[in-house]
Amino acid sequence: DAGVTQSPTHLIKTRGQQVTLRCSPKSGHDTVSWYQQALGQGPQFIFQYYEEEERQRGNFPDRFSGHQFPNYSSELNVNALLLGDSALYLCASSPASRAETQYFGPGTRLLVL
Amino acid sequence: AQSVTQLGSHVSVSEGALVLLRCNYSSSVPPYLFWYVQYPNQGLQLLLKYTSAATLVKGINGFEAEFKKSETSFHLTKPSAHMSDAAEYFCAVSDRGYGGSQGNLIFGKGTKLSVKP
Image (cartoon, rainbow over all chains, first blue to last red; front, side, top):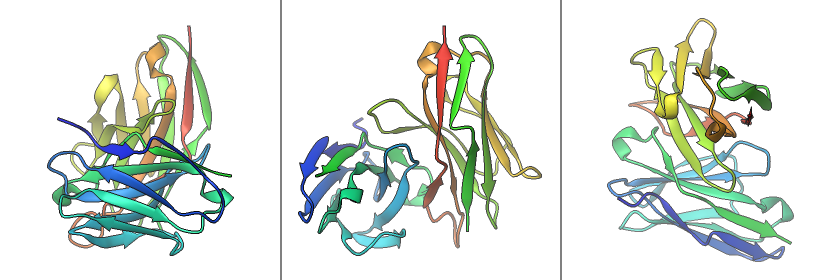
């Protein structure tokens, strides 16, 4: 049983560019959450998707947007990248009935130069 | 608003010694509580969770945690540390919300555990 997968593993972008990160949830899970983990910090909640809609959102600007597809996979898009967007981006999946129990992928490490 | 405080950004123990990682939470409603472990350059792995059943929760790799409402604590322990336990540990809280948990995890800043031979 494959766990949560994310792509790419690493990414280097320059300020002002746009980036798309991808996530495939664990089999049987229909809810996907995204987190940003800056160096030396705990993860911070960005948003959560369920039934192809954003169900919850954390304190992140509109530059951060997402999408969920019918197969439950998800994308995180960040526009107008800033140096401060450099972080590990983590995707987590859960079944809707137990959305609090989240299983994390390995993350995508984004470096903005 | 909910929050999590982990006391001690770094904890060092000798192999075979007791591991104690501290976590205090703030929540207006009975929370769900979690401990996750993160090995270098990896994602988070769920160690254990408290969801209002037994207050003493057993997890993987010999870890356990006790929910103490009066102290608003959820400390993580392991009787005997192993070299492979060296990693960063995160405590997290999730508000139950209306109709069940909202599923939004709020993490502490983490505690890095070192294990000396």
